[in-house]
Length: 514
Image 1 (cartoon, rainbow, N blue to C red):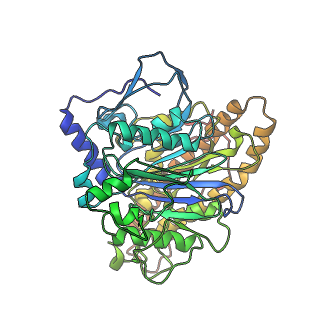
Image 2 (image 1 turned 90 degrees about the vertical axis):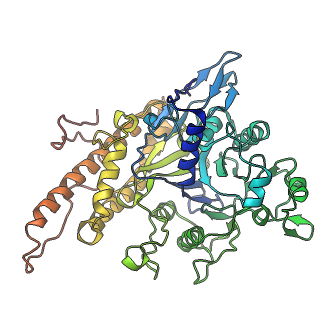
Image 3 (image 1 turned 60 degrees about the horizontal axis):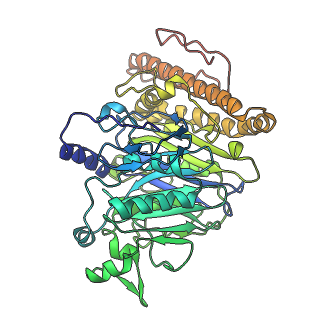
């Protein structure tokens, strides 16, 4: 973790406004799959980071650091926390430093070296009465720092939640958020409602969840050791006459959440539809509980496909003009998507896989990284490129997605099919990677090698595919008036996982994997 964050020369209140505006534009979708209902016995936390497709992302590793007493982490909105004696190494997917809100804002997701996973956050919103009674704090906790705080300090999933709860108690929160953490033993889910009110639960192994931008906790056992809540979450609601519930119990959703929105309900409906949840025909049902029991075990590939879902097999298919304003899970506004998978009966370095795709997941693939083991990422992953740049992993994937979204029928679907096959091959390839990790004398070195090879492989495939699609468009434009001509885009790239050196003529210099 960097010890200091550079702040652009703008007034503090203007900076807060920038952060609040960015947060209010967010619209992520999350998934939890307990190890008891996953096909391979793993825990999975998934989230799409939906903001604006023009906001570039990086994939980096923060190194472990030793700190002296009196050294502080200070973020771009004024939150100041003293460092512990040592902070852990961890992965993150930050935005560009040129946004003016810090060196590495919005770290969003990752693993630390101890195998703790964090995805932070899904933005959510309180109702008017709740926030009026307990306003957000200007220099409190914001999304832009949560992932870094948790992963640099937490030795367990529960400790990550406790750290955040302690910060909200002391400094307040600047926005409403939903956070998920996990380790090899348990997973946790947290909702931050107002400036100082929050609730968190340990997630059961035999359940799954689909989360949109809405609070979903209802009545919970506030006395359970598997529950963490702000100390006056009930008394505050009573004193301000906002408490809702039944049989003497507070209903957190009814007490603190804003009214239900169709854009949230349809995503919960769609996600559950793919993950074997019990749903009705009405996607705008508003009384979903957080947890559900799937009718069959959930596979990794099914979780991946949730991120791409545009309701194609329903009357709400957003690829049709009539449904263009329906909120899809698979939106072009995805900046990155991730699945944090923790597998059982393995050493930590091998068990923790961060499946990551940059940009819109519809036209790229999730790539597996041993995130608890890697100590660095390749240059195209780290490149800070706020504007389109084909040397950047983000823009290589995003540029291709932007093209494919313009005409799915003519060429976009063929690209999607290609990366679907490639992704399936990556899933199979993990088995050989695991074998190498088990026998490795240096797991970090082995993990770094896989990180390098697979990053270059998808980077090269994306750039080459971009070149081929552009070539097809240029050629097809001159043929489209010939109505008797059959012209179909066919990718001329192998969908096999490759670690061979590849030359790219589209770039001014040769890109290789070594």
